[in-house]
Image (cartoon, rainbow, N blue to C red):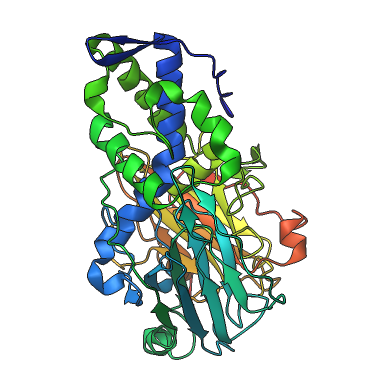
Length: 457
């Protein structure tokens, strides 16, 4: 199912023994939609908590992609990252310094706590290039109704970013491969700097794991909504999920619900988890690949797309900055059976102004993606791989399987697990128009009847 419609807001509520009793169908739907709405807040706050005090108003290096479950699903293996959580509430502001990144892909993406992209900067990110940028916090809200203080009239400045929430996530991506390798990438990553000026800044609201019990999940979501007030135009949505009592003017408390309501809430949360993990949420599978749905990074009120992105690709920028495709096997779905051997023959490198990578991940039981352990510690191939070989006409054969194909094939081998399922993700950083317009299309991944014979070097 692509998306569920929100239910009408005419919900009958009655007080019974000091606890709220709602129509069960409406409460179930409200729990489902409320869980999906809150997932980006829960995930970003969890990343903020992982960064600790060192990551507040300062960049902290991220972990390199490595086998097994990590802090995010589908980490980008060919990059070094750094994160900073900017507390620009209470009329605060921040100065972001972006270095000259000529010759190596590097960018910083600014996002609000709901995952909406405020801007992407860097000389490799099509736009303003390096230099200093100012990030202004949202207008202060006063009174119980949350009225905003009018902003003074000022001339439009090209290098000013207006935050939508009091907290802003700054995520740096730097190409780790290429000339100079990881050492050059670290130097460039560390050159991104930020300075925050805020008065009366509050400590960050706590978060929980997305698989926490619904009582703890919604309690944390309520605190995060209070910390990061939603836009006024979402008031109708919160009226529609009124049976859950979650929202800017709400005060979620598990104890308010009658025992008969608990199963309905749990059922709604279960449905939401299934919907969030349904990664076939792109424009549909075309010729063996799932393309992303329009709107990534600028979600509006598409809360389902926003939740799915938070689940599978937290911190994703808009598709003109990063286009992510996922391969589909012939039998359907978006995961391949481990054990057999496969081949992908690209007609040539994907057309990009940045870099491209083809990454392989094992699929965890909950649907999240993590690098799979292999004897050569290779999790991706792409434009940064010095060993990547091409045919004389420019085609690129990628051999995918649990066993080393041997010979020259080893240079283009992506090791896969022997059991379970795995996923293949093609990322194009700064995709060119012909890729965005789907004039360049990767062919389907081919299932091989047996392992490829070794090729001579």
